Image 1 (cartoon, rainbow, N blue to C red):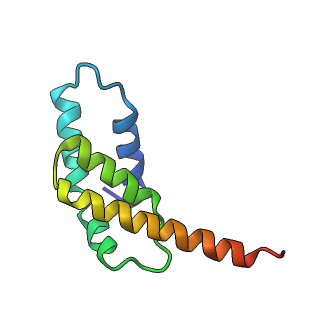
Image 2: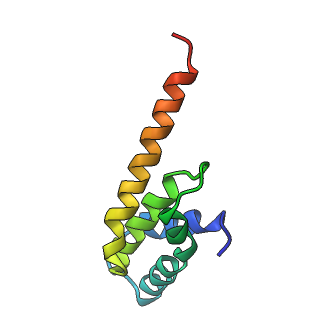
Image 3: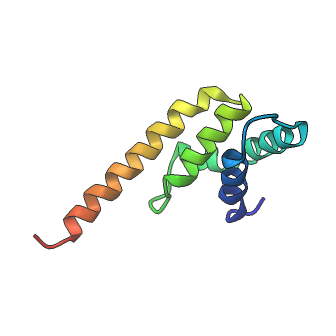
Length: 96
Protein backbone atom coordinates (compact mmCIF):
# COMPACT_ATOMS: atom_id res chain seq x y z
CA UNK A 1 0.00 0.00 0.00
CA UNK A 2 1.25 3.45 -0.76
CA UNK A 3 1.73 5.94 2.04
CA UNK A 4 -1.31 7.95 0.93
CA UNK A 5 -3.70 5.01 0.63
CA UNK A 6 -2.81 3.32 3.93
CA UNK A 7 -4.79 5.75 6.15
CA UNK A 8 -7.62 5.93 3.62
CA UNK A 9 -8.06 2.15 3.42
CA UNK A 10 -7.85 1.73 7.18
CA UNK A 11 -10.29 4.57 7.73
CA UNK A 12 -12.81 3.05 5.34
CA UNK A 13 -12.45 -0.38 6.91
CA UNK A 14 -12.81 0.94 10.44
CA UNK A 15 -15.82 3.13 9.66
CA UNK A 16 -17.71 0.36 7.88
CA UNK A 17 -20.50 -1.28 9.90
CA UNK A 18 -19.26 -4.05 12.17
CA UNK A 19 -22.43 -6.13 12.09
CA UNK A 20 -21.91 -9.32 10.13
CA UNK A 21 -18.16 -8.86 9.75
CA UNK A 22 -17.42 -10.69 6.53
CA UNK A 23 -14.37 -12.87 6.09
CA UNK A 24 -13.26 -10.57 3.25
CA UNK A 25 -13.43 -7.47 5.45
CA UNK A 26 -11.66 -9.24 8.29
CA UNK A 27 -8.89 -10.35 5.92
CA UNK A 28 -8.56 -6.84 4.49
CA UNK A 29 -8.27 -5.46 8.01
CA UNK A 30 -5.56 -8.02 8.87
CA UNK A 31 -3.64 -7.12 5.70
CA UNK A 32 -3.93 -3.41 6.45
CA UNK A 33 -2.70 -3.98 10.00
CA UNK A 34 0.26 -5.98 8.69
CA UNK A 35 0.91 -3.25 6.13
CA UNK A 36 1.77 -0.79 8.87
CA UNK A 37 5.22 -2.26 9.51
CA UNK A 38 6.96 0.80 8.05
CA UNK A 39 4.82 3.03 10.22
CA UNK A 40 5.72 0.95 13.28
CA UNK A 41 9.41 1.25 12.42
CA UNK A 42 9.07 5.03 12.07
CA UNK A 43 7.30 5.24 15.43
CA UNK A 44 10.40 3.84 17.15
CA UNK A 45 12.34 7.01 16.27
CA UNK A 46 9.75 9.42 14.88
CA UNK A 47 10.99 11.81 12.21
CA UNK A 48 10.51 15.49 12.99
CA UNK A 49 7.59 15.93 10.58
CA UNK A 50 5.67 12.75 11.45
CA UNK A 51 1.96 13.21 12.10
CA UNK A 52 -0.03 11.43 14.79
CA UNK A 53 -3.12 10.58 12.72
CA UNK A 54 -1.57 7.54 11.02
CA UNK A 55 -0.33 6.25 14.37
CA UNK A 56 -3.83 6.41 15.85
CA UNK A 57 -5.38 4.77 12.80
CA UNK A 58 -2.79 2.00 12.89
CA UNK A 59 -3.38 1.44 16.62
CA UNK A 60 -7.12 1.12 15.98
CA UNK A 61 -6.53 -1.29 13.10
CA UNK A 62 -4.30 -3.48 15.27
CA UNK A 63 -6.90 -3.51 18.03
CA UNK A 64 -9.71 -4.49 15.67
CA UNK A 65 -7.59 -7.11 13.88
CA UNK A 66 -6.25 -8.39 17.23
CA UNK A 67 -2.73 -8.32 15.81
CA UNK A 68 0.40 -7.05 17.55
CA UNK A 69 -1.71 -5.59 20.35
CA UNK A 70 1.45 -5.02 22.39
CA UNK A 71 2.23 -2.15 20.00
CA UNK A 72 -0.93 -0.18 20.73
CA UNK A 73 0.27 1.50 23.93
CA UNK A 74 3.49 2.64 22.25
CA UNK A 75 1.64 3.96 19.20
CA UNK A 76 -0.75 5.96 21.39
CA UNK A 77 2.09 7.32 23.52
CA UNK A 78 4.12 8.42 20.49
CA UNK A 79 1.01 9.97 18.94
CA UNK A 80 0.28 11.90 22.14
CA UNK A 81 3.88 13.11 22.30
CA UNK A 82 3.70 14.34 18.71
CA UNK A 83 0.41 16.11 19.48
CA UNK A 84 1.92 17.83 22.55
CA UNK A 85 4.96 18.96 20.54
CA UNK A 86 2.71 20.31 17.80
CA UNK A 87 0.50 22.20 20.25
CA UNK A 88 3.52 23.62 22.05
CA UNK A 89 5.19 24.77 18.84
CA UNK A 90 1.91 26.16 17.50
CA UNK A 91 1.36 28.17 20.70
CA UNK A 92 4.89 29.62 20.48
CA UNK A 93 4.37 30.62 16.85
CA UNK A 94 1.26 32.69 17.52
CA UNK A 95 1.69 36.28 18.66
CA UNK A 96 0.34 37.07 22.10
